[in-house]
Length: 222
Image 1 (cartoon, rainbow, N blue to C red):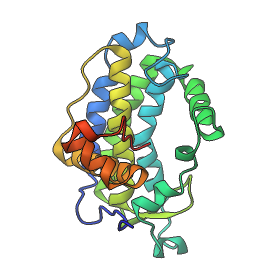
Image 2: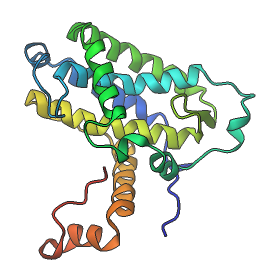
Image 3: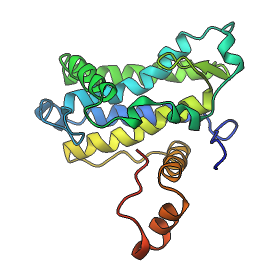
């Protein structure tokens, strides 16, 4: 019913560099040490696990670019962002679904390294990302899905994770959420709107944004 969403040509992948630097600043808040083992704003996930899940997002970009094979036949058929999320198992699962449980378990395993290690990793990956995106190819294969995506579309998915989980972590620490630059925030808001539209339909979204008296209770993207 709606055309596939794509960010090709409309998103500068290097927007992820500034977003990652803001992420590193958030992870450096001293409150993170005292609340490391507390439950975060994400139910069932500790602050430590959420922190590492957040740090993992720019790391995923670096790892994907490092693994790039220009001869991979899958590069010829990139999928749009909409298809990426339509194929995402975790969206269709509840909190206790295998994919979501796996994310929490991996985060808890990483959290054993502690907050100082997370802060150091966040700073390091921001520097690596700056270099990696300078020579990024136009299309990459996403390792955990096996599908190819335009680099702009792939980075948009990581920016969404960075923006949303930065807000989660800030809420968990009771500190201000980072203020992302328009070039990072705009594609995230576009993507969230597209996902909400596909999930709830035109009427629900239009009414929520313009006519709250007729709006449904929620129009969340996930």
